[in-house]
Length: 245
Image (cartoon, rainbow, N blue to C red; front, side, top):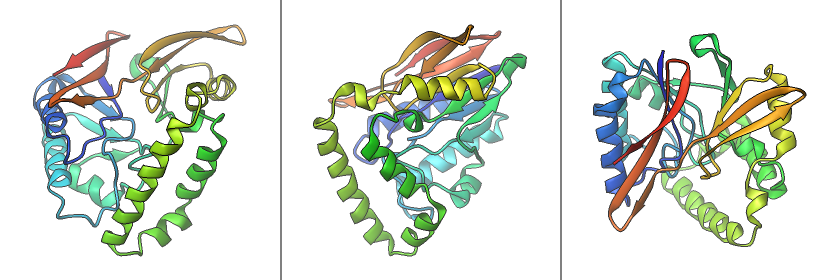
């Protein structure tokens, strides 16, 4: 099988070069994949599927739909920035929304997927916030508010989040070893692929005598008008990284 994994693109109107990299990827390298898994934070923020007039959302939906139409199944797992992305956008983009975590079996090898923020259990304040906003009742209530109000609230939350990050130790915002171990044990000691931490790396860890791999996806970046991305490629039963420009 030929499978691609990406996460943490953080697409927004203020980063057009990054959107251009994504467009080139979907029209080019992604066409070689049988499946594409987007493991969260495709967008910098998502206020609701009813934001149908947003040009960026319209563009991204059409480009993903074109990829799906070319024969690549596209899967999306919500991240901490776009957890409100729902079934209406999924229909527009011809993608499938996945629960977190999800176990897949490429070439009959078990791989568990997650965004990654659920594993950062040392950040107690964030986990409390995550539990609140992932609650279906909270989401339903939040989505009843006018779109403009939702965007204002999200902007305020993002500002507070950035301020909070500057005051936290780096280790607190990384995954917790015990949380990773528990997840690997629950799913039969598979490979683990996740994003969120913006710390791309390959880790090997011994879990109760089982050697497991943890692959951290790279975040996509734009600086001074120059943008870069990365896709993790599964081919011939192995994983490798492919840079995107």
